[in-house]
Amino acid sequence: MTKLPSLLIPLVLSAILAGCHSQPLTDYRPLDKAGMWSGSMEELKKLNPSESEIAQIVALKNAGVNDELCLGLVNAAHAHHHPFTSAAAAKSLNGANFTDAQILAVAKSDQLDAISADAVMYRLIGLSDPTVQILLQRRLRGLPTLSGAEIGRLKNTQLSEQEILARIDNGMTDAQADAEASAREKNRNHSGTGFVRVRGRRR
Image (cartoon, rainbow, N blue to C red):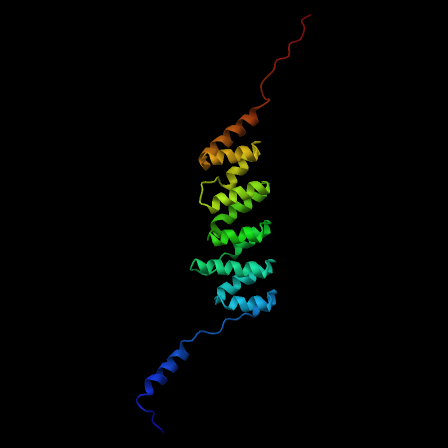
């Protein structure tokens, strides 16, 4: 048996150890099945996504999210030095008819999970697009904003969107909104219930 020169032994051992600890290649086939274009997959490979991120992107593709937004979401997460884990939040915004630009803006602020629930609520309670955009921008800028649930309660007491926005601009908190909504609901429930005595003519 031929002996290796002593100088080569460390190199051979290093190569063997490196082979033992090498990671398996990322499987991109699920993305192909989900309908991602080959060009988009090549761009995605440059971002070196993990297997868990591939699963997140597959979930987005199955929900009808386009390749460009998928790439943008992964890129935004990596820019904040963490893997992309917010497919559910992005899907909910997409399903609530937020634009790709709006969803990407939330992702770039690293607030997908924090903002998505209230943003979807804005749609569900029927706020207009301009009002939704104002509220979304406030959240992205870190400005105090009422929760979607409290905005919905105030709206149901017949306050207009402009009146609600004025209260938000004045710094109304959720607790204050709850108190006003409760008072307005109470007044509404008691309106028209006062007893009116009808006097008839005496004979």
